[in-house]
Length: 201
Image (cartoon, rainbow, N blue to C red):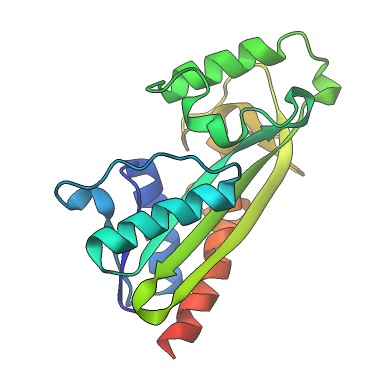
């Protein structure tokens, strides 16, 4: 399994996947699904991160006939009953920007005491290869808390308002290397790389 399609058009995710997997699996060629023409639009109808990741990987595997991996991830805030959750990317609306989603979340937590703002980033990564009769999901979690302001210019999404457990900096104030060690996606990708190594034999 030397060539895998990543089911995303999100350039930030492509960069993160290539950076982490490139280090763990140097011989792997990772292609973004957005590099293909007429890629089907995928409706994220799953009720969980795992269901959505699997859904995306299945569609892209069927479309490209290549092994496909897909990520579904988001921020879960306990005081908001798990929101934004699976709607993290579209929390402020279907085509919302990262800044709009962050602004809505800050507004939603404004009246909640800081001590109650526990949160976690969750990530599910699915691998589908029908030719090998393969379908699996790995997951990763980064616990921490959200704050009512943005800090830092690194990262993307809700990173500037999320402080990982054991840190005083936001995820957007950490270097890529430090973030990769503890991030939900880094944890899930390390699990996935172990599986891919076994499959490569």
